Image 1 (cartoon, rainbow, N blue to C red):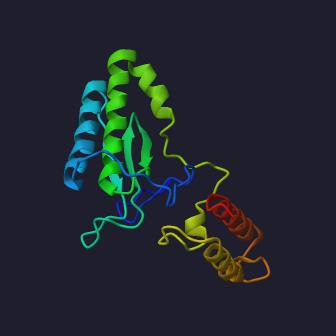
Image 2: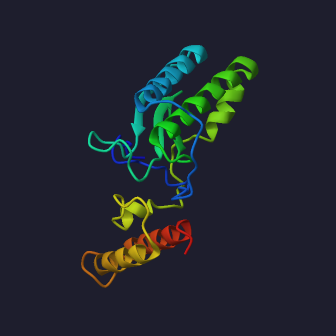
Image 3: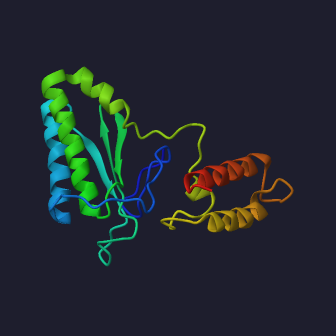
Amino acid sequence: MTAPTAYPLAWPTRIPMRGKNKKSSQFKTSLSKALDNVKKSLEMFGRDAKKPISNIVISSNVTLGMQNPEESGVAVYFTWEGQQKVIPVDRYKKVQDNLQAIHHIIEARRTELRHGGIEIVRASFAGFAALPDPNSVNWRNVLGLHKVAHPTAAEIKAAYKTMAKFRHPDKETGSAAMMSDLNRARDTALKEVGS
């Protein structure tokens, strides 16, 4: 897997995004406080487990000019016990609320550690593996839609048509494998957006 980026949002391909079906939360946490909470929770988890967490990347669409982007999802990547993990949350309408939810997820792992031990936590963290599904492709990258938060079916089909001009096996720049990846990316994208 390539290294995740802090910006734009690097969402794990095996977990579908909610799109516009997001909720308001009861959290009253600012963006800076939610960031601090996530960082401290990760640090304390590593200390409690006696296995530090490293390579932390907090990925979102927040920039200096836009603290409330249309896509409010957050994915926190980190390395624990030599494996890259990711905790992605896009349940809430605000970035800080999704960050605060990630803080609570990490705190739940600390509770598991205290009451169930390291083996329970390892089993729990297995679900947070950041490795992509080997049978999937990152459709956003293949279709050139990685900067579009919520592409429509029409946008996906248009991107497919454009990319097919370069990837088709009859073209000098294409191949059967490239076209297969493109077809799979289109099918996955349309399934995810509900078309």
